[in-house]
Image 1 (cartoon, one colour):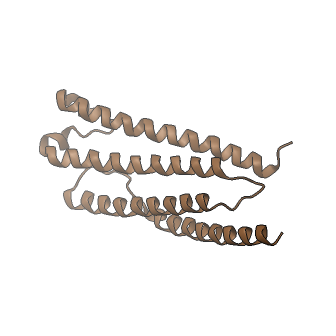
Image 2 (tube, helix red, strand yellow):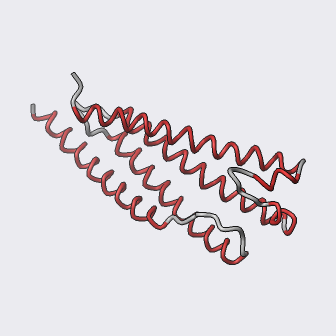
Image 3 (cartoon, one colour):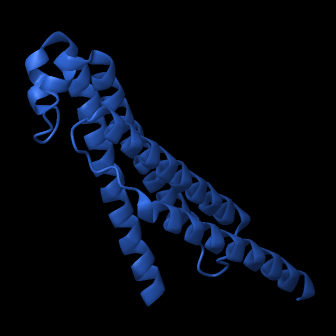
Length: 170
């Protein structure tokens, strides 16, 4: 019989897969429609779920491409973070939960969320300066989340040390 913790981890794993697939589809759809818009400019009117960049494309193709590139990069980083979470959840062993590989994956997640925050901050500044269409690039909570996950990674590392020490004394 599964424990409550095992059930929660299994549920989180499924949710992580759903998030990963959904973000990847959105990222792929934007990339696909961007390249399609290079051949048919009318596609820019509905790039993805009502995102109308037709006027931006005609005003400045560079700004249009940069806008799409930033949006794609943010989505790609989010998809990568979801993939790292899937890896963490698949590596956790409840009988011996503290593992250096899990701690390193958690640090990598923290770093990628920090990169996401920096890119979101830069994108918001760029959006304001260039008066681009309003896109929700607000990543303010990402800095807090990055720090929190980094803290958990450090706790995990300490747990690895204690677990290794206990294994030696038995």
